[in-house]
Image (cartoon, rainbow, N blue to C red; front, side, top):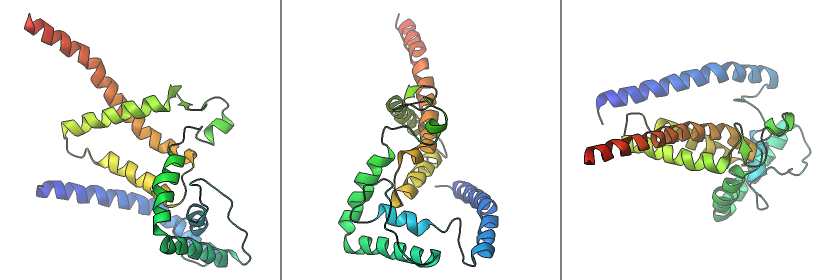
Length: 212
């Protein structure tokens, strides 16, 4: 690893953090003024945490039990319930994350809310431009393999961003509607695979001509 590569990595990371701070910082200040509590984005994080981390979790959204008290007392209770499940049943937590939430995240159903406000636009396993998610996933994986084989600098950035995005939702719960932004990665990588596949016949013709 060269010093320049490390400097580029630090520079890129700094730009990402600066962009995130520019977007989130003002909202965090607003939350402090409005709630009187330090809230990064929204106060319902413990609520979502409790939905996906308990003994009866399905990996999808479920309605948690009603708890009396004000907002902050309820959030404290939800956080305690989720952490208690993680502490008392770590193997169950791993099963929920890597089996139930993972399957729920990649489930072949329409990625709400787009299909609900645009009937038939996202229908079953199809999405615009009406190609199968299975096809996009396969071609996208092939395209990612092409990029890995090329070994160009920075190839790891997009896969890491995708892994981070998916990982955040696996901490909470994995409804298929959260998958929609992740599909963009596979569509872009599918374009790489299609570009490589369209060049394959020309290479074969050149090889054939050379052989003759």
